[in-house]
Amino acid sequence: MAIRTYKNFIDGKWVASSSGKTFDNINPANKKEILGRFQKSNANDLNNAVKSAVKAQECWRNLPAPKRGEILFRVGELLIKHKESLAQDMTREMGKVLNETRGDVQEAIDLTYYTAGEGRRLQGETVPSELNNKFCMTVRMPVGVVAAITPWNFPIAIPSWKLIPALICGNTVVFKPASDTPLSAYRFVKLFEEAGLPPGVLNFITGTGTEIGEPLVEHHNINLVSFTGSTDTGAKVAHKCAWNMKQYSLEMGGKNAIIVMDDANLDLAVEGVIWGAFGTTGQRCTACSRVIVHKKVLKKFTNLLLKRTKALRLGDGLKNTTDVGPLINEAQRQKVLGYCKVGVGEGAKLLLGGNVFKNGKCRNGFFFEPTLFAGVSPKMRIAQEEIFGPVLSILECKSLENAVEIVNDSRFGLSSAIYTQDVNRAFKAIEKLDTGLTYINSSTIGAEVQLPFGGTKGTGNGHREAGTTALEIFTEWKSVFVDYSGTLQKAQIED
Image (cartoon, rainbow, N blue to C red):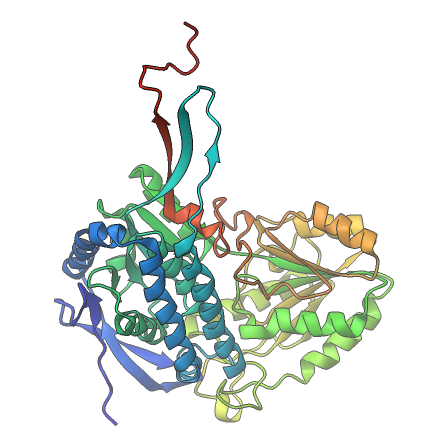
């Protein structure tokens, strides 16, 4: 079968890169399968995409927000219509099991419907004036042209967090997806085209971070950069944006932990830890990579967890017998392998896994064994650094206070969870855990679109995605004063 070549989307047209070059998109479960060829874009393509977004911005801004919402509602309807085929393509492209990719698309559906409704709100506020015959209010203005730079692990859900709020607020967008997952991004953009989005409002360009990502961040006509990715790359984005006096929103790494107290429902806790640690093969910013267990139940919990982890089945995510799919690429697999060697070298006890997995039909993919380390101390690298793979460290705690101290001893602050039957412990954890998300008797993953998403410390720069808080990223505030007194009134001045 001939391999299809996909194009960029600029000013409402699908166009090839002026570089004349493409790159292959491969299936991480079977690296011999090429899913398509995508444009290896250059500076000329980037400039054309930004120019198109600049040109379209005024007309899009002037379209009433409820009308913008109607277009985005149609995108939601199309996501529902194509949910299954989008999920299957996503599994082929990034590896996670089909139920998870269906969830990825569903999250985009939920986010789109929720945020499109903001077209009839976009709320400001009215407040009383200190003067008679004077009216005071605030209104929102679009920021302008947004650069949306997204990762490969949620190739439709995370773009929806950026594109939908940006568009409902009246911004135009240049969208650069991760080079590992351009097909899902392409298909998402096609739905905006089908929904009737005007030309130039959303532009889609593929290519490397060096050739496209960095110049996009630095481009003088980009007003805001919305980035999801590693903390190291996010720090570089922040530096470049600050130097160029442009706004930026960062959603970065995590070293998330689940606390299991001595009164916890251990069977429920094990299921939560398995889901948090090995869902998406551990390739989530909210993945549970540390489980902190009270010493009274440590042995029992560890035995239950080990048994449950041994039962996980690796394979192609399209098969309903698969629990854990491949890692995204060979570089990521070598990174995970390297951390496993570090853990052994640090003196942690390797209970399970720690190796590349090449058995049977998995031999042509980027598979890695689900891995458990015991006897991990809080300062070990495997307890501090984001691994982004199916590697879980088990740590012991003596009390809730000790557990909270261990969780907070991290450069990251994205997600945390606690399993306990004690409401007092639960609320103390909510109060003391320094993370943007906290779950009680649930895993570290499972955020919902109507609530803010993001974290503290090295996880972000204070912004939150999803919920109504996303509007704060993509709008500027304007304070408006209407004086209908017919005289010159001077606020704060005594006559």
